[in-house]
Structures are given as structure tokens and as C-alpha cells.
Image 1 (cartoon, one colour):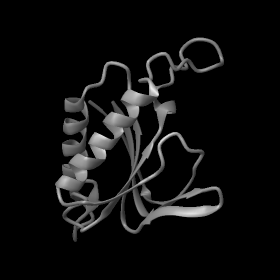
Image 2 (cartoon, rainbow, N blue to C red):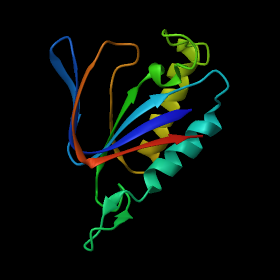
Image 3 (spheres, one colour):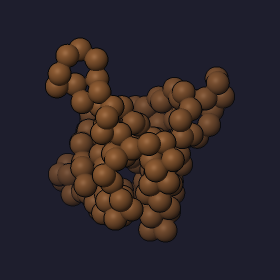
Image 4 (cartoon, rainbow, N blue to C red):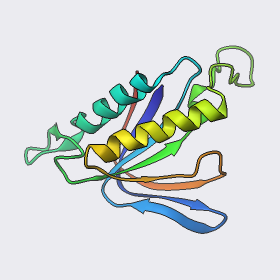
Length: 145
């Protein structure tokens, strides 16, 4: 399981020219689920992301988590994170989980964050989405479990 995490001032998802969800200060999490992933991968990843200290404290040091800053989290399914670009010029998606499994693990991941008391919004699984964000920093990390 892979997550591209971006610290944002705000982020939103639009589907068919209609606002679907939006957050203020917090994290945009693009989540890729691979064939070999299990629920425990998502549980560990959610725990890691929720405690990752990537927000600045009063001394401008990355010392605070999304919880510490009372931030929100927007989770968007992103199967292209599982793409392999090592060979040729067309990505291979052989490592990506099938849609049914990916959706189940995506929903589990979101549930773990919500159970942790976070304000979580989502994209729509398998939809064509316009994702808009203002990256704060910019601060972006790739986290894998």
C-alpha cells in the first residue's frame, strides 16, 4: 500500500463539475492499493500518517501531526501510484489490486482514520475526479506499508 501525502492549506475533489468534497488545513492522501496488500497494511499506514509530524511548531520545526493542528484529511483512491514505469514507455499496472479488493481496503483505511477521531473526507472510488489543492510548503511525502 502506498500513500502520497501532501500537507495542504486546502484541497477539494470535483466530479462532473460538482464539488464532491473539500477540506481546509490538513492532509491530502492519495492512496494506492496493491495486490498483496491486506487490511493490516492499511491499519499501519493510517496510524503512521495520523502521527507523522510534518506540520510546523512555533519554532518552524516539523514537529506537529495533523491531529496536533486539528487538521482534516482528504483521502483519494489513486491506483496509478501502483504503476511500474521501469520498462518501456507505458506504465504497467500489474501490481495494482483488483477494484473490489482495492475499494474494500480503501474504505477500511478511511474507517481507521475516522475511528481515530479525524475529520475525513474522500473522493469517489473509480470516478474521474478533478483534485485541486494548495500544497503548504510544498510538503510532500511518499509512505509505504
